[in-house]
Image 1 (cartoon, one colour):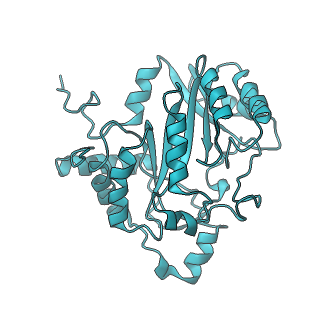
Image 2 (cartoon, helix red, strand yellow):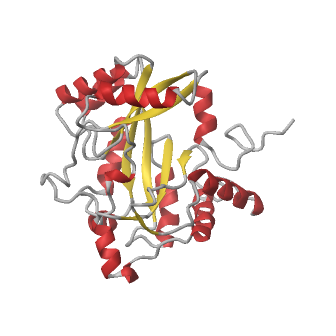
Length: 316
């Protein structure tokens, strides 16, 4: 019998999402992405045009995700696909593309409640921006959370306002803090996204941000390495001025993630270490086609080689 070594209750050297999620449910749960046709305030002219400079939603929308179809149709296509792979499971509707709270509350209610009416859908995962939330929306989600599993995912991306301006986010880090504070203690599960390697954020900045993020009220963290994706402003910048970028090699990233996570609160659940863009859209960095699970295995191995773990260097 393996002795539990870490405060999260198992022998992995980091507080992993898979172990956490299995404790929440007695059966397999699958996320199914839906595209409700939302936009973002930095796309429609409210705060800017063009969206985030690194963003191409085609890089993560699956084939069954089509805004020309209803929410129900998209979910049924996704369920049909996954039910062939796994016999017994239930589903979370993942509102993933663009900013999924960026609409009038009446519109949000219509879409969310349509998703929740699909058989075997037990909750929602809602990806959005810190500046696209308000008390009325949160009050409504809090009510939903009494009956369903509700997750809010905020794109924080950086703690540096200059970097946020450079990538055309259209919000400040102060707005990120405000959104997280507004969302806490509501029965809603809160996660964030953060990008390692953005121009303007040095490696030293990224390590300092681990401490800053650790003081914020959220449960889960998705880390992404900066990827240069075709069809984005970052792709154009990269082709014109590659010296602007200090992209991670695969081995550099594995080592750096360990250093970052050492400085992260042990209470934060790590949902993902890397992003994985389709190879036909990815310009750089090229890591030889390795999959996310392979990178995760290498990161886990690196933790063990260095006899370190999440939070080892974290100090309140």
